[in-house]
Length: 70
Image 1 (cartoon, one colour):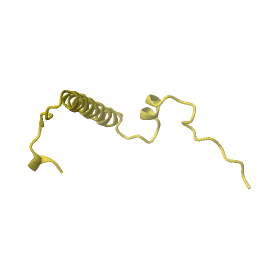
Image 2 (tube, helix red, strand yellow):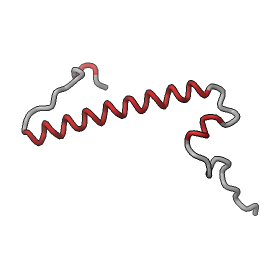
Image 3 (cartoon, one colour):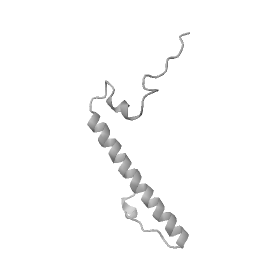
């Protein structure tokens, strides 16, 4: 039985994995990460608004109508 070798990226930072050989389009990966961080920020803000509304005993403002939610 062969001993398991660690993954080649196990000791590198997360950012360096964007520039490993084989990733064909690093700018596209950065664009996707930027979009994910933006959406995460929006979700965090909405969560804070919902918690504040709950603490105050009022309904939270919905930014998107129900028909646009999946």
